[in-house]
Image (cartoon, rainbow, N blue to C red; front, side):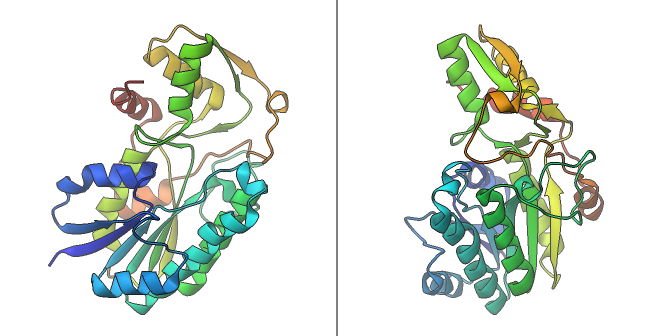
Length: 288
């Protein structure tokens, strides 16, 4: 029997990557929705969808991700990142479906000196991070079975992201200033999408909630990341390293976002690609 998977936020980076991979996973029947087809802040809409379609699993790719704007749009950020997630947790629990929820490195304060494990203390420094942590808490307390995946520095050939911004600005300006004192691990959304679709069958019989970290392998700064993008794309542009204090933003960024991935590798026996290999693959699909 096929597993019916509802994907919310299907037009974002991760949702788009799942869509692109769907044909390779014949064991699943996908229903792809975005705000136009399903408003997850409306619990009755969600109940109707999950009940009528016989949904076995929900992958929640919907999120408010405008980090700086969240400082002003707190109610909206909380509605999408917390209230809607509570709805998902309660309704999946009611219909005995698995919830796969995507979270972020921003739940940490970025002051660590070693990769964050799933059990390290959370301490978000901006409202986006706080709203995402509140969503995690709703899942932990209200979902019957769920996987929370924390990821970092997500990019894709779909949607808007750092990689596309660097390509565009590099071609326009010829000189870029990029912070070198924030370090982490980029995550190619396609790699994350593949892992999600691989691990669902191994988890669907469990009745518990687990938190996992996932990013590509390796550690770099935003400066290193930008330099690699410019070099691989052969764009004539100088990339200069600057300190965070020279590039102030409304929301505080974590200085250290490296995630320890030992748990997800061990539990699901997966191999995670190196960040540069994944970046090269992604850049072959971006023709901007």
